[in-house]
Length: 293
Ligand SMILES: [Zn+2]
Image (cartoon, rainbow, N blue to C red):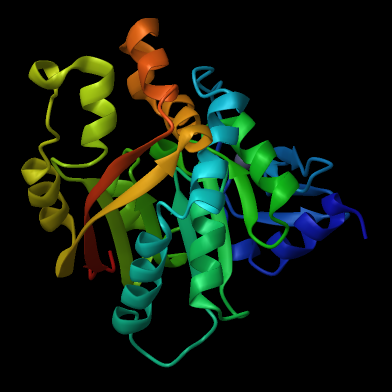
């Protein structure tokens, strides 16, 4: 089987979870190569198996270099391992029911490594993973590396997913669209949002901008807004420090939009250290979607 037909077969098992991004009508897989709506809007699976269901052009700021650095940090440095384990544990604890087969989507998945790692930690072969991102570059990389999830180039604000089609929504350090999250979540589905706290990557921010310009993240408003849309089941506060080596420091700088507005001298000073500590300081908000309408 080609990657294209594998991708098509996976979506065929879950056809009802998709709606046409242009006219919102239901879709079906045709000839193991396309997803077609009843008005004949047609989207072909790429040779790597992903689908481009985006109605608008992607941001070009997220480059292949950024995603490669992000992947190395996520899969090799272990910086986010504790977060992946914690999220998998929270899903196990809160998902309710005993079903081992359910649908989990990472909305704003980038190059897919967080979703891949969380699926690994969850360990159940019955979970269907869906990764969605507006960046085609990210989805191409995800589909080349990770075969199992369904990978979609798509717009969070106008997502190609059907009403109440997901059991678990992940949204990790990435912008949200709560109205959409609510629409596509199944009744009693989980919505898990990871937001940075004030200490998140503070050593990196201090190195790039200096202590006095070190803007702290404020997430009170995010949490309040989240509460307006979902029943808050839990908030898990994760705080730990990890030491990164020189190669990893370079990847930290390359994966973060922070470096776009810093100067070269400061960046060089940071990436030429032999090693440095970095703080991970996050809140994991666990919400339950109770609105069935
Ligand atoms: Zn259509």
